[in-house]
Length: 93
Image 1 (cartoon, rainbow, N blue to C red):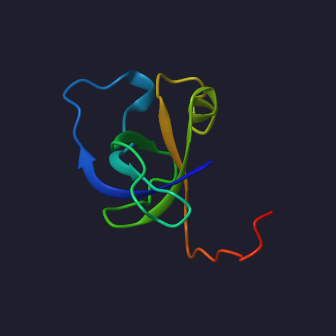
Image 2: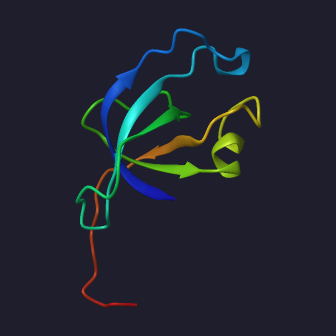
Image 3: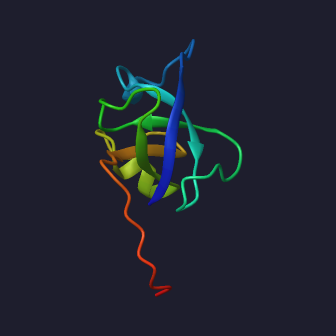
C-alpha cells in the first residue's frame, strides 16, 4: 500500500465496460512524511468516497485490479482506503 493525496478528478471519454461508474482520480504519491514523492498518477476509486484533498492509500499492479468488482479490470492503481490520520514513531524499526 502507498500513501497519496487526491489532487483532482479525471473524466475519461471512453470507459471499459467493467469500469462504468467507477470514479477516476488524480493522486499525488506521498512519502511517509506526507511530502510529494514522484509524479501524479491516475487511480480508480474502489471506495467510491474519496475526493479532492483527501489523504488516501492505494495499491498498484495486479493487486489494484483485485480491489474492484469485477476482478481483473484493466487498471494500474486503485484507491483502497481513506486515511483518518498518520502518526509516525521515533523508532526506526
